[in-house]
Image (cartoon, rainbow, N blue to C red; front, side, top):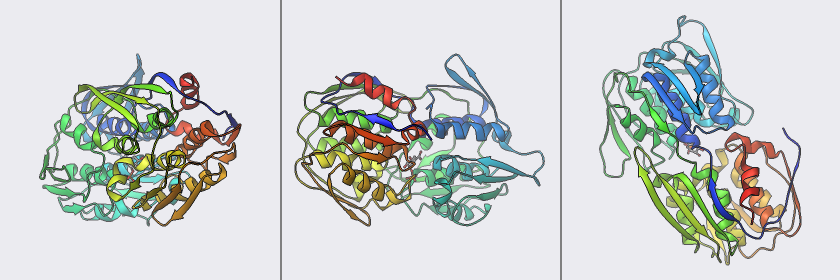
Length: 433
Ligand code: S3P
């Protein structure tokens, strides 16, 4: 995919950093703007390949989009934007590497007129889709295929239903809500633990009939036959998952002082930062604006960190950063135990296996469990030659570990970072003190 990259050790990081727009919010903004009625303007969209996959797919399905002065303009024609003129012919849609594209589009297209064949790259074609297909069947959705892509959505004719997400997954929840909005009659959508709630926030801001039935926000009544959504005017806040590697370096390299600005501070996305604090990191949070999503800055200072116990309740809000947390743990004092994280095995790579392989390559002491890891702290890391394993987040973990190692490291396939954060290495260079 790209030439190997040399990674040098780093003694501290300093300065101010703005990271690219949030990936989860960007996917949703594109999809919902496409089916809103009117002209939406989205600035600060995530620049990575995953969000490009969503953009390409929507264009192919008939959405009119154009770049205009740093923003993306989307001309929505209401829900029917995605309806196909010839419902009998199959529209081929490529989701690339993006699970969010595939899963949310399953829910959205289930209500549209047409036959839509969703496919993905090798990694996405291994990831479970039955978790969306099965509960969507309760609405009468017809999705041909098995547990993995490719799948063909035969859209239309949805009816309201009472459904629960079997796994804690914002992608599954979002797909169910998108289907419920297009169904005839009201629905209820419930999840056992609150996952990232960007869909609910954005839909409410666009006027969707979405009513909370509990205090935590895990249970919703969704009105069916949803009238056209209002268009969006949005600046996408920075992605806390993209900021995580720089923040982890700042927290773990004594003498570091880093401010990350313009960041999405939605609590359902800050689990990693709460875990870092539990390890002893000094992190101050300041919310500077609070529209549909709270946004602001995090100030992180370096110091000594201690190992912690991470359980199922900690994992949901930190799911994409657990591999990085394991890397921080290797450098902290004492042991860290991570449990209840079996979902990691179903991401872009088996992130328990790939994180363990990465940590071992750098000389850390780690034991693999079915649903997590046991990490001995206080490691002295040595430079290593490692692979990104086709996974953007593993590539970023390698950069973190290499910064802490004695001597130079070599990362194979560093280009995978472009899935979410194309300028990742350049930004790390800029904050190196
Ligand atoms: C995402 C939800 C999470 C996360 C993924 C993005 C989203 O996946 O890991 O990177 O945008 O809804 P799951 O829904 O599979 O937990």
